Length: 108
Image 1 (spheres, one colour):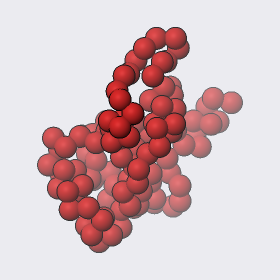
Image 2 (cartoon, helix red, strand yellow):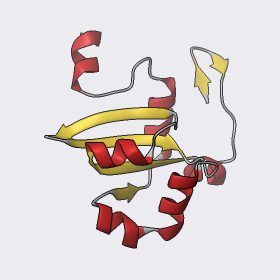
Image 3 (tube, helix red, strand yellow):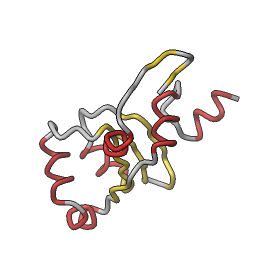
Image 4 (cartoon, one colour):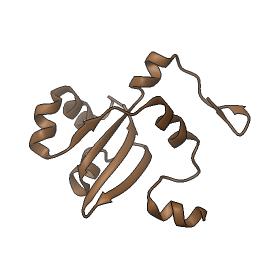
């Protein structure tokens, strides 16, 4: 991946597909799960709801447990686990901001 003409990231496509994960749900619940994680992209999409993209970092015990238990725990907590397309990930990684409507107005 290039950012402003410089190579900033290189992974095989298969690894890049697994490099990040999207979480969508109640803002407090999502933020609690990803505490200490690097947020690649963040977007509020409804009242008290949040969509975030983070690096799939299994060194975080809370996140690791959440991801390993999968959809059952996600449904119980009201958080959806979503794949992040490679195109979207490239946009998020090279963006100067974290996303969301405020960034649209800031850029305008």
